[in-house]
Amino acid sequence: MLAVRMLRVNGPPDRAFRMALGALVLLLAAGCHRSAPDHLLRARDLVYARQPQAALREYRQALDIVEKDDGPEATRIRAAALRGAADVYWLELRDVPKAVSVYRELMAQVPDAPETAEAHVILAGILETHYRDLRGAISELTAALGRNPPQAPDLRYHVAKLYFELGDYQQAELEARAVANQFPTSGVADDAWMLIGQSLSMREGMRPEATKAFTTLVERFPKSELVPHALFEIGKLRSESGDDAGAIQAWVRALERHPDPAVVQNAIARTRQRIAQTTPRGMGAREAFQRPDQPRKVVQARTSLEAAGGTAEQAAREHGD
Image (cartoon, rainbow, N blue to C red; front, side, top):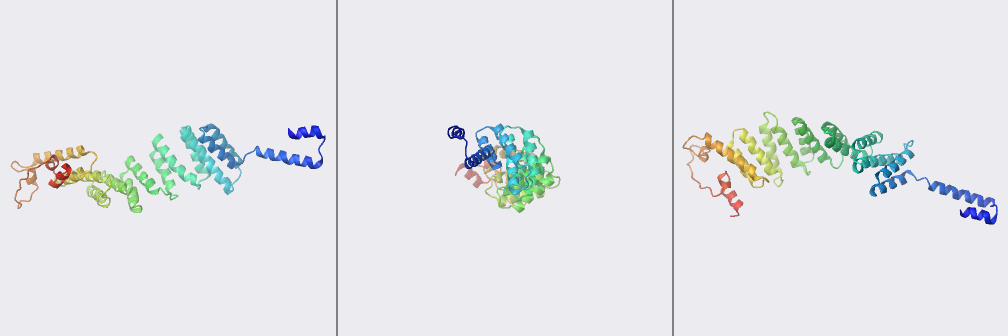
């Protein structure tokens, strides 16, 4: 408008003025066409502003600009735009099929990008929770693990849990053992030993190996919150093997820290009742476990814990004596 007014007041411009005016027009035209990085920034701002559809348009424009460019910068922009669009469909619009489609497009177009490794983990979660495609989730997690991500222990442990859920207990044990051996100081090492024991206990003839796995957890991670659960499982395995005295011993230890002591107490009570029913008349349950050459001792139980098979010291700790 200013240039038009100048033309009207001063008459036709000279050659120098026409060149300056042309340069100004070119600059203004260039400003009307944002670059691919500008579209990415604009898209992210729109996501924060809760305008997902507008953000998707910006991501698409960024992709259109680099469509025929295979350079490193274009590859970076392509990965960021596809990951951003997929996240919008998943997190903002909850359009699961479209999110899956765009995550897969990211993996196909930019397989080596950091965004792709993260996308494998996200897609695994979608397949597991929305489609119950556990094997598909395992495949995606395995692809993510191929990039040696920092969360490798957690991802590998999750793979083991998925195999356990599928009923493939042998593979679950192998995967969990890999976690325990490769990441012995990780935050999921105790979980891995628990899963090893559970997987072995589900297989025929593997009670001794399962007991050993649970015992390893108890010995290596004495402060773990899983210890009382492992002790409870040891008690079950001993009971199933006919070692009622050993079962009660493990359950009494579990009572000290178990979050649901009633479950443990019921197991102890049922076992002691079975002992009483199978013990010859005239011989008490405690005497049944004594060697013939040992003198019989009569001990008066002071508390329910001691009566269930706990020691006097444990009973004292229970009541703060």
